[in-house]
Length: 492
Ligand SMILES: Cc1cc2nc3c(=O)[nH]c(=O)nc-3n(C[C@H](O)[C@H](O)[C@H](O)COP(=O)(O)OP(=O)(O)OC[C@H]3O[C@@H](n4cnc5c(N)ncnc54)[C@H](O)[C@@H]3O)c2cc1C
Image (cartoon, rainbow, N blue to C red):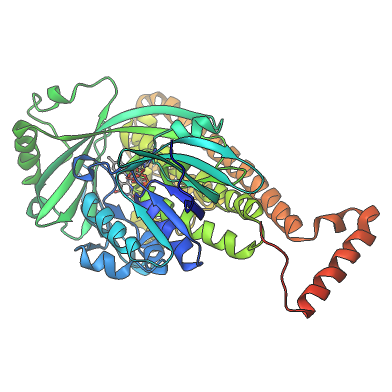
């Protein structure tokens, strides 16, 4: 095996998807000599993220990708249209949050990679594969790379794992993950003219399995059909009413697309690694956790990771390890809320139970009762407000609206037998509040603990112990002396 003498970087990033490219841009901006390595998967054959919430767009802008985004033909998205059979379409606008974008996945990632390739301090090896970790010491971490028939060792003071769901490197690091397969996503491509609301993302709901749809450029639209675990997708089109929640002309367009064959497939999973940092190694994007794509939040979250990492490195310029610990703390709360939101949304839209039917009615009532309610929901969905307490509050408000809706109907219908029969689902609906209330409490407590820990870690650690006060004073004197001489302490 050959080890090139010049293969030493400040950071090695494995994976040049949205997360890896965003981190490379962030590190380039900090002047870090960065190696970005990607195994060169054919993204045209992949079925992956294509809608970016406004928070993701603004994150890309902060990382200097706005021109790349414009050049690749990204289309603006105003918000979401929620369509349910027999109900008027619900249009939820991003409004003050700004505009999102949609773009075919391969085009987006090609544009990000091309852009990042030109950034200072970035070396990009496409078609190279990181085979494994070689070592991690107090000073550096090294990986073995297979590139153009050669095996190389690259060393860096930090390693960023942006490999998406691929778990080999996580496993090598001893990072365990909770994994749950939820369903399969079937991807169809139709004409964008068939979409009911051209400038919106669409969610078609019928209490069976949600369908998403949005324009992806070149006059085309991507339709994402959630296929539950026990269902064979080929039998879908045998039912002439499928897709029930989708109006014409999209209904016929989807049936034709299924008959044409060659749809795209992706597995819908929840993956939750037990940590996002180990020593000098950090996980970003899907590698650090993913959920069902119904919340369309994966890429926005990946970009947020890159910004959080940048902020942590700026705040702790002298210690990579301490910066990575801060990064882990900073991403914990938003990630927890995103995953909880996605799972609550999926249950609400995909479950045919009576209590979830009540919840969907409550959601509709909640949204129609005020624009502020719509904005609060979209702020959560789009990742602007990712407090667990906000998520629990939203859920509680929707349940309250569901209960008001149910009791008004019960009074209007004057049907005591029917009302008694519905008490079970009502009780179960109220029961669904408990996990969210518990998660909000746990989330709030752990956020406070994290905040206190972060504050403590910013103080000189020895000062926390009265016995080492003289040592702390000595070190302060040394620091003042060094500053006076215009030198700085060595970085690690
Ligand atoms: C069907 C579907 C629809 C989705 N829709 C949306 C959406 O509309 N909006 C949204 O925000 N999110 C969506 N998501 C989620 C989104 O696609 C992901 O969150 C996002 O792609 C994650 O980016 P990433 O960079 O972390 O990982 P990836 O995009 O998976 O990139 C990982 C990269 O790492 C490389 N790699 C892996 N192992 C190695 C190795 N050992 N050496 C070198 N390179 C390696 C791979 O080649 C790949 O290029 C969707 C997901 C699915 C499945």
